[in-house]
Image (tube, rainbow, N blue to C red; front, side, top):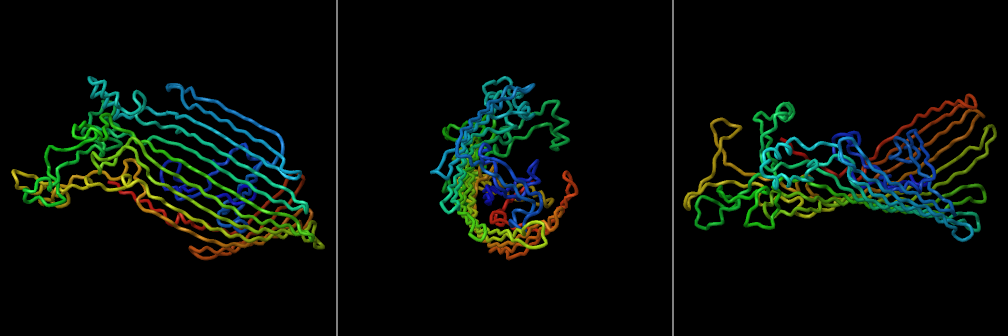
Length: 524
């Protein structure tokens, strides 16, 4: 939360299952990295389950970032750093400039502005791949070819902190009216760009170095001592059956198995502008995150002591993705090398009415705090398509092969691996989609509306004992309604020792993104 208002979710639904992200698999949380740290005055942490007060997202507690509200003063900070790691070149230069300024607004208000710019360079904390070293050894007599290895002479893929360039801004403002009420507004904007290295694609099969052999056998099951070339460098056949109208036995959709082939690792004079990676390639993934968040509200105290706060928030978070230095193998020589992979967008609108009243009751050591509120939230999640070349299955994706002699052709037959003594037609295949990360080929536009209401009671029933009780009802358009409860107690034993206990019910409502995103992986 920002100043007590729900912060929107990121557009990213975490679907990568591996490494440190395994614990976050399937999550869609807020991107707190979009908040400039210089804008934060303090951080409140509620460690109890709080779904009964704040709704589904608070099942594990609440973080409430309190924003700076000073109406005067200027603060500027800067940072410059880098790494000097043993065994590696200096890298990871870190630059950051941040500023905060407070200004008066009329005689009873303030405007507080925070801005942060940062730029982080790549760090590299890995040796190069053994297959790249084997490629260099196999081509030692041809240094011009070895120099075609990605990032030469460094590691062909870069594992470490990725480069990042970001601008973040936050404005917080408020003005007190003559009747004592307050009109307030705060907004957050961020634009963060980052990119990272994928795995190296070896262009040709090469003999492993002596030190590679035990590793190849133990981890990759390679028994012939050869590092295999990546599937993106499989040959594709260029002559369709329809290239010669006189052919017989070679139907439309078939391809002629002959020497007219194309490979991304070999220069083909007929395609001077086609992708060419004689030293292999390492795809580079680019992501741009944009965050917009704004809240406007009105709060005050009625003559009878009733506190009220009415507010509305609107937000959007987006992630645009692209790849460079790669290919869509199924497009053959027509493949581009740069791809726009698509965009994820999360939009949210939230409206809140919150009331509280200190009710004086005889017999209690403090007034009974009675709080209640209503919330309306509209969420929308979108997956926007990438370039067709980033997800399409091109004409070379599956090529039934035919052998031709003169004008007579017949299918190329190979032993059926599933049925001994039988034969099937040979089909040459090529990988589809932008290699490394295929683009978004299925659009999604999903929404969810929810309504919620809560009541919260808390008081010191004795000078040393505080009790609290809360309940919330929520209704979601996607799956129905639920009612939650919470009871809490705090007992003060001494001035330096207290005991707390909480019992509550909670739930997690799936977001429109979580309910609609699919990830399909086919692995052999």
